[in-house]
Amino acid sequence: MPLNMVWNKNFLVFTLLFCFAFLSYANDSQYVIVSFKDKDLSKIVWEDYYSSKSLERRLRQGLDFNYHDYPIQTSYITSLINAGYQVVDSSRWLNAALVLLSSPHDSCFDSLSDFSFVNSVEYLGGRMKQEQYHLSQDSTYNEEEGILSSVAIKSIGLDTLHQEGYLGKDITIAIIDAGFKELQHLQRFQHLYEDQILGERNFIDSSFSVYSETMHGTKIMSLFSCKNGQELIGGSPKANFWLLVSEAAYDEYPLEEFYYVKALEFCDSVGVDIVNASIGYNRFDSVEDSYQIHDLYTKRSISSRASSIAASKGILLVTSAGNEGTSSWKEVTIPADADSIIAVGATNFKGEPAYFASYGREGAQLVRPNLSAPGDKVYTLNENGRFTLSYGSSYAAPLISAAIACLWEKYPSIKAYDMIQYLEQTATHHSNPELQTGYGFPDLKKLLRFLDTIDQSR
Image 1 (cartoon, rainbow, N blue to C red):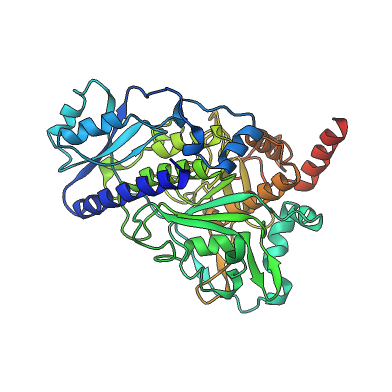
Image 2 (image 1 turned 90 degrees about the horizontal axis):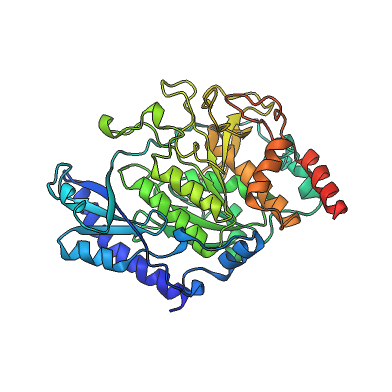
């Protein structure tokens, strides 16, 4: 079966199931993740499930298919449905089904464990805490100066790659966010619709456009690629993009973490190189569902688990570290605690931590955040197509993602894990990582000298 037919069929099924699930959410319902014991590992045609670009990414990075890549056993799903359970969706990476129960204390919860093929059953509770950010007009800004191509880009040496002509061309970036309102209408983004926007997908509700709800994703895009008059500006203005929604902008509910997992699986299948995510989980509306500080670095969260799996597929995942520095939580938010990814802390343009920047943990096995970038008083576009000041680690992550896109354009053979190591080892504070900024700003000029030395020695 052709790849697009597999995607279309699966997404249609999900859409129909979601309609019931969404309506049921208003009631006293609860979602559970039912994990299965095994998969059918018989030979399959990988081209039916993965795009040519996805297969090429794996080949380029020397990655074989493994257990996570196989589809789940459809017979297990059928058995649950025949037993009367409402199966909403499934995840091949988690090898699990998402099941809707009529109440948190549904007697069927215990019965799910009685199936011989079920490994575990866990509640998926809580709502995501949307990252807060502030906007203010700056009447002193002269647009002709091209702010997005100046201070922030120069702060990490990305201007050097731009001067050499590396602008992220042919590198695919997925932006996972809550919405991209007005993106398709603003003149500053019209160049993207010639051939750089590869597609959109709303994992929360496929009947709603990714261009509804919130401007947050639009602001993120302006840091990657937009126009200032005729000038093309941003960190990787020639990259290709997928626009993905896995968060609800206003009415947030427990499924969002699962949607994030599904979005990452999709990124793998279509051949995304870099994922830029501005999400953060910690406190939820329901106290009993909220994460506790000791849940960090434990892989309890399915979004942290999936982030690490994405990394194992050769995808470089860049996420915001969070804005909890002044809250009682204080530390980075989930999934910034996942291994083999980049979690970006927010600083001012001097590299000093923003007052709201989340902290890493003293003595933790992982340095989190591991890199940092300007996220305090960063210019982004608003709904009127004018530049405005924004604050948050959401606006720090895109600069790192864009830098990686430009580096990969110049050095396509670098593996994702090695890219992280190179960025950390040449960062400003590598010898003495700090709790809010990690290894500090990447120093791309230093990194380029190092990589050129490697190339010459081959």
